[in-house]
Length: 224
Image (cartoon, rainbow, N blue to C red; front, side, top):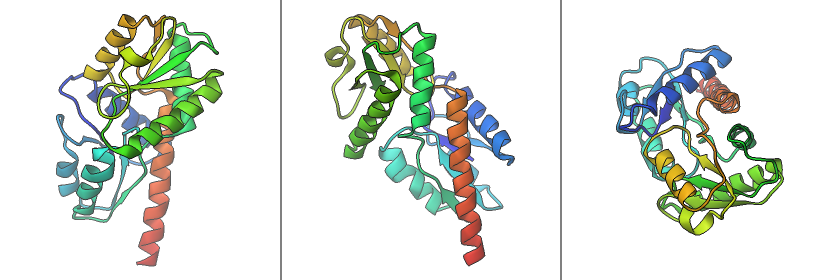
Protein backbone atom coordinates (compact mmCIF):
# COMPACT_ATOMS: atom_id res chain seq x y z
CA UNK A 1 0.00 0.00 0.00
CA UNK A 2 1.01 3.61 -0.43
CA UNK A 3 0.40 6.68 1.69
CA UNK A 4 0.21 10.22 0.34
CA UNK A 5 -0.28 13.50 2.15
CA UNK A 6 -3.89 14.02 1.07
CA UNK A 7 -5.59 17.18 -0.15
CA UNK A 8 -9.02 18.76 -0.04
CA UNK A 9 -8.50 19.48 -3.73
CA UNK A 10 -9.91 16.40 -5.47
CA UNK A 11 -7.32 16.64 -8.26
CA UNK A 12 -4.55 15.34 -5.98
CA UNK A 13 -6.03 12.00 -4.99
CA UNK A 14 -6.20 10.49 -8.51
CA UNK A 15 -2.42 10.88 -8.87
CA UNK A 16 -1.80 8.77 -5.77
CA UNK A 17 -4.29 6.16 -6.95
CA UNK A 18 -2.78 6.01 -10.44
CA UNK A 19 0.77 5.72 -9.10
CA UNK A 20 -0.32 2.97 -6.71
CA UNK A 21 -2.20 1.03 -9.38
CA UNK A 22 0.65 1.25 -11.90
CA UNK A 23 3.37 0.35 -9.37
CA UNK A 24 1.32 -2.56 -8.04
CA UNK A 25 0.96 -3.87 -11.58
CA UNK A 26 4.73 -3.65 -12.10
CA UNK A 27 5.45 -5.53 -8.89
CA UNK A 28 2.59 -7.97 -9.37
CA UNK A 29 0.87 -7.40 -6.01
CA UNK A 30 -2.46 -5.88 -4.91
CA UNK A 31 -2.01 -2.21 -4.04
CA UNK A 32 -4.10 0.31 -2.11
CA UNK A 33 -3.62 4.07 -1.88
CA UNK A 34 -4.14 5.78 1.48
CA UNK A 35 -3.62 9.26 2.92
CA UNK A 36 -2.20 10.82 6.07
CA UNK A 37 -5.03 13.34 6.27
CA UNK A 38 -7.62 15.32 4.30
CA UNK A 39 -8.69 12.45 2.03
CA UNK A 40 -10.07 8.92 2.28
CA UNK A 41 -9.09 6.26 3.03
CA UNK A 42 -6.81 7.31 5.87
CA UNK A 43 -3.63 5.32 6.49
CA UNK A 44 -4.67 4.55 10.05
CA UNK A 45 -8.03 3.16 8.88
CA UNK A 46 -6.50 0.95 6.18
CA UNK A 47 -3.92 -0.42 8.60
CA UNK A 48 -6.55 -1.06 11.28
CA UNK A 49 -8.57 -3.14 8.81
CA UNK A 50 -5.56 -5.12 7.50
CA UNK A 51 -5.67 -8.87 8.03
CA UNK A 52 -2.28 -9.76 6.53
CA UNK A 53 1.27 -8.27 6.52
CA UNK A 54 1.64 -5.03 4.56
CA UNK A 55 4.39 -2.91 3.04
CA UNK A 56 3.82 0.84 3.22
CA UNK A 57 5.45 3.12 0.62
CA UNK A 58 5.25 6.86 1.46
CA UNK A 59 4.40 8.94 -1.62
CA UNK A 60 6.33 11.76 0.00
CA UNK A 61 9.33 13.52 -1.50
CA UNK A 62 11.55 14.55 1.39
CA UNK A 63 11.98 14.60 5.15
CA UNK A 64 9.22 16.27 7.13
CA UNK A 65 6.66 15.71 9.87
CA UNK A 66 4.83 12.95 8.00
CA UNK A 67 7.99 11.06 6.98
CA UNK A 68 9.68 11.46 10.36
CA UNK A 69 6.73 11.01 12.72
CA UNK A 70 3.15 10.52 11.53
CA UNK A 71 3.65 7.64 9.11
CA UNK A 72 6.18 5.66 11.20
CA UNK A 73 3.92 5.96 14.26
CA UNK A 74 0.90 4.72 12.32
CA UNK A 75 2.86 1.78 10.87
CA UNK A 76 4.24 0.87 14.30
CA UNK A 77 0.68 0.71 15.68
CA UNK A 78 -0.60 -1.59 12.91
CA UNK A 79 -2.29 -4.80 14.12
CA UNK A 80 -0.38 -6.84 11.52
CA UNK A 81 3.34 -6.97 10.61
CA UNK A 82 4.00 -3.78 8.62
CA UNK A 83 7.19 -2.75 6.82
CA UNK A 84 7.80 0.93 6.05
CA UNK A 85 10.01 1.90 3.10
CA UNK A 86 12.00 5.07 2.55
CA UNK A 87 10.26 8.14 1.15
CA UNK A 88 10.51 8.70 -2.60
CA UNK A 89 13.16 11.39 -2.51
CA UNK A 90 15.92 12.13 -3.09
CA UNK A 91 16.22 9.93 -6.19
CA UNK A 92 17.67 10.31 -9.69
CA UNK A 93 14.37 8.98 -11.01
CA UNK A 94 12.60 12.05 -9.66
CA UNK A 95 15.21 14.24 -11.35
CA UNK A 96 14.55 12.35 -14.59
CA UNK A 97 10.84 13.03 -14.25
CA UNK A 98 11.43 16.75 -13.61
CA UNK A 99 13.63 17.00 -16.71
CA UNK A 100 10.79 15.48 -18.73
CA UNK A 101 8.29 17.95 -17.28
CA UNK A 102 10.63 20.85 -18.06
CA UNK A 103 10.98 19.76 -21.68
CA UNK A 104 7.20 19.36 -21.95
CA UNK A 105 6.84 22.98 -20.76
CA UNK A 106 9.18 24.20 -23.51
CA UNK A 107 12.29 24.70 -21.40
CA UNK A 108 15.67 24.10 -23.03
CA UNK A 109 18.35 21.87 -21.44
CA UNK A 110 20.91 24.16 -19.86
CA UNK A 111 18.35 26.93 -19.21
CA UNK A 112 18.54 28.25 -15.62
CA UNK A 113 16.11 26.37 -13.37
CA UNK A 114 14.43 27.01 -10.05
CA UNK A 115 12.98 23.96 -8.32
CA UNK A 116 10.05 24.83 -6.06
CA UNK A 117 9.13 22.49 -3.19
CA UNK A 118 6.30 22.58 -0.65
CA UNK A 119 8.83 22.95 2.19
CA UNK A 120 9.04 21.79 5.78
CA UNK A 121 10.28 23.06 9.13
CA UNK A 122 12.36 19.89 9.60
CA UNK A 123 16.10 20.59 9.04
CA UNK A 124 16.53 17.30 7.18
CA UNK A 125 14.24 18.54 4.42
CA UNK A 126 16.82 21.16 3.40
CA UNK A 127 19.45 18.48 2.83
CA UNK A 128 17.00 16.36 0.83
CA UNK A 129 16.09 19.29 -1.41
CA UNK A 130 19.74 20.21 -1.95
CA UNK A 131 20.54 16.62 -2.96
CA UNK A 132 17.61 16.57 -5.39
CA UNK A 133 18.65 19.89 -6.90
CA UNK A 134 22.17 18.56 -7.49
CA UNK A 135 20.78 15.48 -9.26
CA UNK A 136 18.50 17.64 -11.41
CA UNK A 137 21.35 20.03 -12.24
CA UNK A 138 23.59 17.20 -13.41
CA UNK A 139 20.89 15.84 -15.71
CA UNK A 140 19.70 19.24 -16.94
CA UNK A 141 23.15 20.69 -17.50
CA UNK A 142 22.74 23.82 -15.39
CA UNK A 143 22.79 24.80 -11.71
CA UNK A 144 19.41 24.50 -10.02
CA UNK A 145 18.27 26.95 -7.36
CA UNK A 146 15.76 25.87 -4.71
CA UNK A 147 12.72 27.72 -3.40
CA UNK A 148 10.08 26.58 -0.93
CA UNK A 149 6.48 27.60 -0.46
CA UNK A 150 6.47 27.08 3.31
CA UNK A 151 8.79 26.15 6.15
CA UNK A 152 12.56 26.54 5.82
CA UNK A 153 14.13 28.14 2.76
CA UNK A 154 13.56 31.13 0.49
CA UNK A 155 10.30 31.79 -1.31
CA UNK A 156 10.01 31.82 -5.11
CA UNK A 157 9.85 35.63 -5.22
CA UNK A 158 13.36 35.74 -3.75
CA UNK A 159 14.83 32.92 -5.87
CA UNK A 160 13.22 32.88 -9.33
CA UNK A 161 14.96 35.10 -11.88
CA UNK A 162 13.51 36.48 -15.09
CA UNK A 163 13.89 33.88 -17.82
CA UNK A 164 14.13 30.91 -15.45
CA UNK A 165 12.41 27.64 -16.08
CA UNK A 166 10.54 26.64 -12.93
CA UNK A 167 9.77 23.05 -12.01
CA UNK A 168 7.57 22.14 -9.04
CA UNK A 169 8.98 19.41 -6.83
CA UNK A 170 5.43 18.33 -6.09
CA UNK A 171 3.72 15.03 -6.70
CA UNK A 172 0.18 16.17 -7.44
CA UNK A 173 -1.76 19.30 -8.44
CA UNK A 174 -3.45 21.33 -5.75
CA UNK A 175 -2.97 24.41 -3.60
CA UNK A 176 0.84 24.33 -3.66
CA UNK A 177 1.10 23.74 -7.42
CA UNK A 178 -1.19 26.72 -8.08
CA UNK A 179 0.88 28.90 -5.77
CA UNK A 180 4.07 27.73 -7.43
CA UNK A 181 2.80 28.68 -10.89
CA UNK A 182 1.41 32.03 -9.77
CA UNK A 183 4.53 33.10 -7.87
CA UNK A 184 6.89 31.83 -10.57
CA UNK A 185 5.14 33.78 -13.30
CA UNK A 186 4.97 36.87 -11.11
CA UNK A 187 8.75 36.64 -10.69
CA UNK A 188 9.31 36.45 -14.45
CA UNK A 189 9.67 32.74 -15.13
CA UNK A 190 9.80 31.93 -18.85
CA UNK A 191 8.38 28.41 -18.40
CA UNK A 192 6.57 26.64 -15.59
CA UNK A 193 6.55 22.84 -15.68
CA UNK A 194 3.82 20.50 -14.51
CA UNK A 195 3.96 18.48 -11.28
CA UNK A 196 5.64 15.07 -11.25
CA UNK A 197 2.32 13.22 -11.39
CA UNK A 198 2.22 9.60 -12.51
CA UNK A 199 5.28 9.95 -14.75
CA UNK A 200 6.77 6.53 -15.66
CA UNK A 201 9.94 7.34 -13.70
CA UNK A 202 7.88 7.98 -10.58
CA UNK A 203 5.94 4.75 -11.11
CA UNK A 204 9.26 2.89 -11.44
CA UNK A 205 10.50 4.46 -8.21
CA UNK A 206 7.36 3.52 -6.26
CA UNK A 207 7.63 -0.04 -7.58
CA UNK A 208 11.29 -0.23 -6.57
CA UNK A 209 10.51 0.99 -3.05
CA UNK A 210 7.76 -1.64 -2.80
CA UNK A 211 10.07 -4.42 -4.00
CA UNK A 212 12.68 -3.48 -1.40
CA UNK A 213 10.02 -3.43 1.30
CA UNK A 214 8.66 -6.82 0.25
CA UNK A 215 12.16 -8.32 0.30
CA UNK A 216 12.81 -6.96 3.80
CA UNK A 217 9.42 -8.23 5.02
CA UNK A 218 10.12 -11.74 3.68
CA UNK A 219 13.55 -11.76 5.31
CA UNK A 220 12.03 -10.69 8.65
CA UNK A 221 9.38 -13.40 8.37
CA UNK A 222 12.02 -16.09 7.77
CA UNK A 223 14.01 -14.88 10.75
CA UNK A 224 10.99 -14.87 13.09
